[in-house]
Image 1: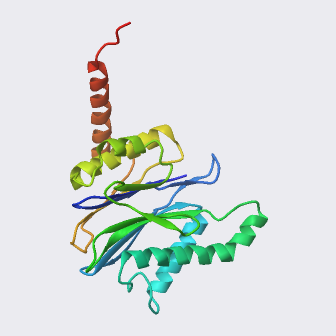
Image 2: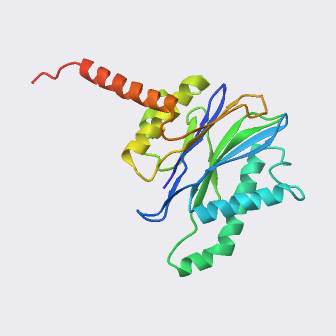
Image 3: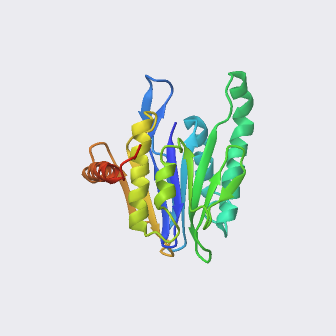
Length: 240
């Protein structure tokens, strides 16, 4: 299991992903699930991956190989919509190649992505691409998209993330949603990769990894817990 979040704000975009993968309760490992395609001054595209590691890595490698060849590829397309279609095409190509063999072993193709970013001349956009290759786009009514183990972190995002939220405040909310998810599900774990993109900068300037024991993350976690308990104790008493 994994947990990935993409947020679209008026100020910019936020991307975050955990790094835990597992193939059974005694086979855990760490792999980065965030991939960045950047041409500073022209485009920034961020891809978060969820699902079977072999499938997601294959899709990402196909996209990287194509980016080094003839257009169209992620470095050449004129819109984020076209970029989302290229990711979907790569997913379907891997599924056609591997699907029959997976079915023979009682498995199925399992890969999904969150894709977001900005290309010069276009507004920022954010997509959730499903295993079948179809996708949805974030908007003002739905400013964040999740993939993987989403249910534990969603209530926190619902409470605080709106398009008008600042990058700073929304980033804190995203990190708290990761803490909530890791507390409730051991298949999601650190390190957490975080990237914030400021609107129209067309460059990655804010990227950070939080490992276990990170001072800032631990402080945020402890203050959130203390604040929640304080509010709980201050709620009106129930009258019987």
